[in-house]
Length: 298
Image 1 (tube, one colour):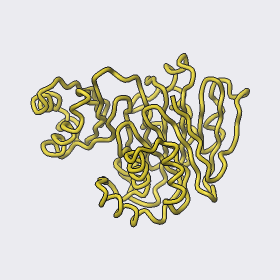
Image 2 (cartoon, helix red, strand yellow; image 1 turned 30 degrees about the vertical axis):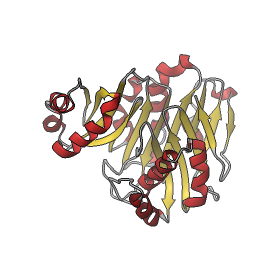
Image 3 (spheres, helix red, strand yellow; image 1 turned 120 degrees about the vertical axis):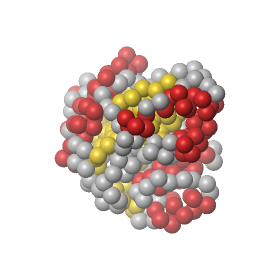
Image 4 (cartoon, one colour; image 1 turned 180 degrees about the horizontal axis):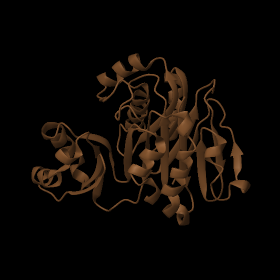
């Protein structure tokens, strides 16, 4: 049993409240997943630049002088903003893969949580409200956000095993459920060049969608194909730079509720996650249908 929340802002006037509203929603899901928690926030892009959100269990050691060392290796300016065990590195957009390679080779204690023009991912072991406060979610703004609270079933309770998972630029996925064919699918994806950090079945789902989008599909099309290729029970909420998608498996035994107004689209594993949103009393509210893709894009 896990808890999922998601918020896609349609009215730009509401973007400064994205973090505060998402934190409020995530707090209602604590009992659904006390093991670990995380969230992805899509902020405003900065022309010519990209961001890598990184994590280390020893941030004082691993982040000290990291921006200068990486700038020297890349031959380009690098900025770093630290938040507890995570930090955001800002690099030229054409240096993202070079930055990843240098981090792997020369900074083995540092893990990349996400990369892209807009996405930042923060996740840790612990109570969801503590994770939210630790990384200042309430203060963040942006166009859309996805949060998750985890009760582990398929793999160990670790920072890397927490959700969201990101396996492509500006992409992320959170999952409530359990896949039954993730090991065979993982072997196939590895042969096609996808890399994995954990044994978590949800990371396989994220990589699958990335693999499909690398073939030219948009998020909605990739989600449609997942119904053919993924076995098990799942509710996915997925983000891309411009998109927000939801899908449930054909049996749809994992709870889900959605709301839409002129200002936003919202998702929660339970209605109480949505109850505090502005204008919820006038929102269209429904339970997502089984085996049906819901997809919004800017």
